[in-house]
Image (tube, rainbow, N blue to C red; front, top):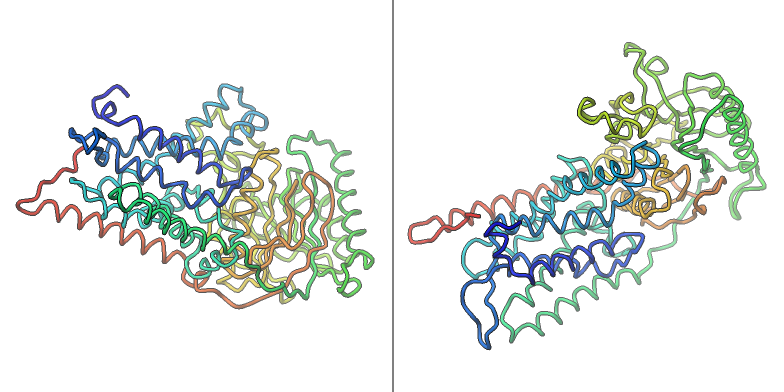
Length: 546
C-alpha cells in the first residue's frame, strides 16, 4: 500500500470508490433503494478515469488527473468489490458462526476471505477498463467499452466462480417494463442498461465543464424515464390451477430424536391435509381444486428411502388426491440403478395421488461448503456447516418431472441464482417452475430478500410461473412478470393456497440462453485487441504498463 504506484492515486479517487461501494450496497435488500442503481457505478468509473495527477495544472490551479494505470485501476476496483461483498453478503459470517461451528474470529476470517476472492471480479472490471482507456486523455473508448466489460465480467463470475449472487440487473426486478428485456437477453440485458446510464452520468463529470450540466441533465432524464417503468403495471395474471405451498419453519439447528421427528412429520401432514380441504380453496376456485402440494427443502432428516417418511407422505397424497413434490435426502439405491449405494443427494421427490413415488430430481449445482466441501484437506475447518457436508453428490439431469401430464421444472435453493441453468427446465418443456429452498441459514439478514428477487427474475426471463416453497420464508406464488401474487409471512409454520397457470411458450432467452453476455464478452475482447493494435502502431506510444 506504500508503493509508489499506490501513493500516486489521488485521494479523491479513494473517496469516489468508497461512495460507489456504499451506493452499490444500498441498491440491494434489505436497504433496497433500487433507484440508486442508475448512479451507483458512476463514481467508480470517474475514479478509474481520473485517478492520478498528470503533473500539470488546469485553469485556476485545479489538479489535472489522468486515468489510472492498470495496477492502480485494479486496486481501486478491487477495494470497491471487497466493500460491496462485505455490505451485501455479511450474512456469511452468521451462517458460518451459528451453523458452521466456527468461532467468531474464524467466521470473520471466512467472510473476509470470501470478500477478497469475489472482489477480484470488480478488480477485473477496473483492470480491463484501464486497458481500454490506454494512454492519453481520450476516455471515450473506455466509456463506450464499460457496459460491455461489466456484463462480460458478470458472465465470468457466473461461469468461473459459480456465485452470480446479486447480478446488477436484479436491482430492477420490480421495473415491469424494463425487466421484460430479460425475455431476450436474460438479466444481463438489464445490467447493460444500468451500466449504460452510469457511463452517461460519469461522462458528465469527465468531459469539458461547459458541457457538464447538459450531459448530467440528459443522463438523469434517461434514468428517470427508465425508472418510470416501475409505475407501469402488467396485465392481471390469469390463473386456472391451485397449488398448496407448505412453509415448514423448522429450525436448521434442531436436535432430532425419533419422537421429535414423528411429531414434526405428523404436524406437517395434518397442516397439509387441513389446508388442502375444499373450504381452504380461494374465492373463484373450484372446491377441492388443489392439484399440487409442495414441501420445501428442509433441515429435517427426511430420507426418500425411509418408510417413516415415505408412508405418511404417500397417505397424504392419497388423502388429498394431489401430486406432491417434497424436499428430501435421496440415495442412489432409490431411483438410480447401477450407482454406488453410498451416494446421497439433495433431492425433490414426486409422489402421485395414488401414493407412488414416481420420480426424483437430484440437485445439480451444489453449494460449496454447504453441500460439499471443496478441497477437503485444505478447508477441513469449514466442515461443520451441515452434518452432510462433503457427502452430497451432484445430480446429472435437469429434465422436468412428469406429474400426470403436467411438466414441473424443479430446482433447489441456490440453483435459482443461475439464469441459464433455470432456463434449461423451460427449454425442456417445463410448464411451471418449482423452487424448493431453505433460507433458514440466512437468519434475519437481507439474504432471503435478495434470494427472492433473483428467483423472481427467473420467472420473468422464462415467462413462467414459479411456485417458491421455502422452509422459513418467503414462500410465494410468482407470476411471469415477477410479481409475488400471494405470499406467507416469514418464520411461521403455515400453508399457502397459491394460484398459478401452465404455459408451454418459450422466450428467446429460454431457447438461446446466455447469447447476450457472450456477445458482450466478444465485443470486449475486440475492443481490447483494437486498443493494443492501435497504440502499438509506428508513431504511437504504447503504455499498458502498470
